[in-house]
Length: 330
Image: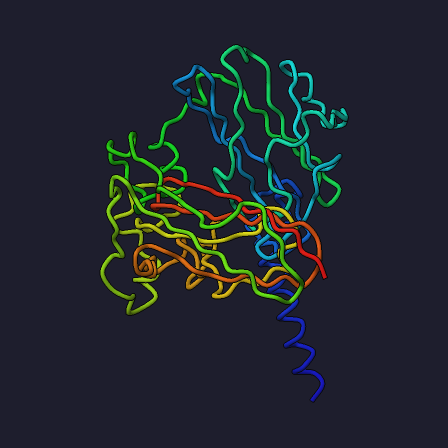
């Protein structure tokens, strides 16, 4: 009875060698398509810039967390800082450029999984010239940098923003060039206090001033897997997002695993897995806004400290933000 078992084992071994041989022959430089749950680094990203009426410029930043599950925290310091530099002076990633005077430019210290685009802005004056705004982020022992310049190649408008996030199912409608972000208003003080274990009420309203892009949910729930993954009607190679006003609270600074929202918030990061509780997750059906477009939530903290909570409002193509800082004590 041992001989057939041996032959079966040998056959499996030969098959495994046959299947893996082409990949081995390509060497270590072959491109992979793995989904990493944790252990990977975070890449800061410069999204682009646009001019302001007063002559200054707005620079947009975000990041790509290569992990699908791991969330990381990096306070402002030598692992998470901004610099103002002359061109090319920080191309060498081993050059340390931390300066407390310029380190904090409003970036997050808590990092959610995957792509988090157009998350915050940095303003620079009209005479900024050819200098660079550099965001340095070190995670899992690897240093990455985003270099922001006023190069014409990076000039953008709201249509570019929408295209990059797959807004309105990837629409390239020219009207998106003048699309207005939601009007967002948070009720109450922007500086608050709370105690561990005691719910704190958060109330915010969001309305789309130009009602564009108009809300749409593609009509119905998918009936099969083909409908789940269809790209019909998607005009962009970027993963698409349903149009329509939505609002979510996130932890922008502070340990998010110690802040529990009720109800659970729709993700503000680009989770593309089906039924992912994300606007980028098929079947792309957004929940209806509450009465009066007024969202009421609570958050309960399980550890003392300072937390920055952010209300993120979107029409599916453009974003508005408001921060609330909470001092949590026992």
